[in-house]
Length: 129
Image (cartoon, rainbow, N blue to C red):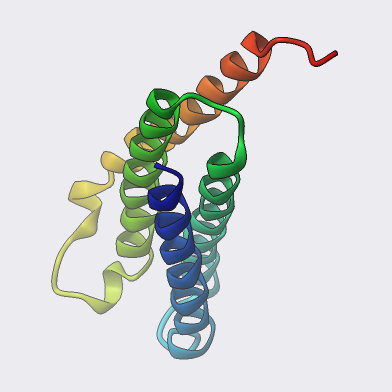
């Protein structure tokens, strides 16, 4: 499970840098300031959670908990950041991404749940002597 977390976290981080660079350099003339800021929000949250996934691999958690966190974080990032990328670039595509905007809060909720799972598991850890 640790390898899966490390690989997935690395891929999410890599893609956050690539997508962020694309947004900053490839979209700056095509999108207004609000759309670029929205796009950047998706990139930031993707990177934050890529780092969280990498850290999760080194936390003293059960394999079951790590698997749950992997699913929550990956699905949350895809739904949250992915939908934000679509919504921010809506004017550039022929597809109306506002119809899929409902998945943004679902993705955000999954990310919140992942953090909640960590809080609970950290409280459950036995104190080291």
